[in-house]
Amino acid sequence: AQKVTQAQTEISVVEKEDVTLDCVYETRDTTYYLFWYKQPPSGELVFLIRRNSFDEQNEISGRYSWNFQKSTSSFNFTITASQVVDSAVYFCALKNNFNKFYFGSGTKLNVKP
Amino acid sequence: DSGVTQTPKHLITATGQRVTLRCSPRSGDLSVYWYQQSLDQGLQFLIQYYNGEERAKGNILERFSAQQFPDLHSELNLSSLELGDSALYFCASSQTDRGLREGEKLFFGSGTQLSVL
Image: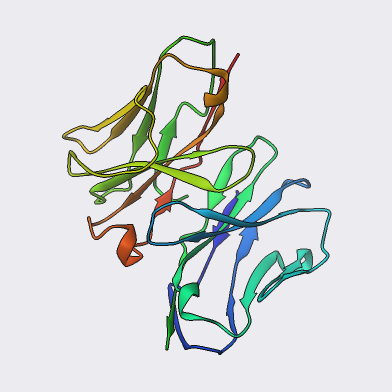
């Protein structure tokens, strides 16, 4: 079975705090891709990162960083020094060998001033 | 399993043709959203329906149309297809019509891969 779980339904932090959004996945495929998307109020899903299953190197992009650990089937997303503009719903997703996507249920992040 | 069902999973057609993509929302959800994704990039919002009525419109081409039926399933019709319409089309659903502005969470289907040859 393929599945993506984002156990945190909603998180609230105060500006400048660091926050980590959890993503745990299940798949039997050996080759797969993991994604994070941001859903701002405008409606589109903004692509943040894509990681293939053979690349466990962590990545940092500005205030964003991702920790991919195959041993625990997790692909967590950390925002450092959060800002109000980071408030959004964030989705984690898995794409399997057949180009089929499995989305998590999303985590709503509220960053308060 | 999100509870959102999209059919077909794959569709191959030729330029100039017309296709219909179908989406069944989660049980109890009244809103349906359609998105288009190209090349593993972001998902572009196309259109939203709530309880049968169009509620919000994104960057949807005039050649595309959608509707939501009384049983709440939705169809996205793509006509006069062009090569550039090849993409993954997602459907998502949510319970209310609070909408994306209030950060309402969506539940996504697995997508329909459309290939226009």
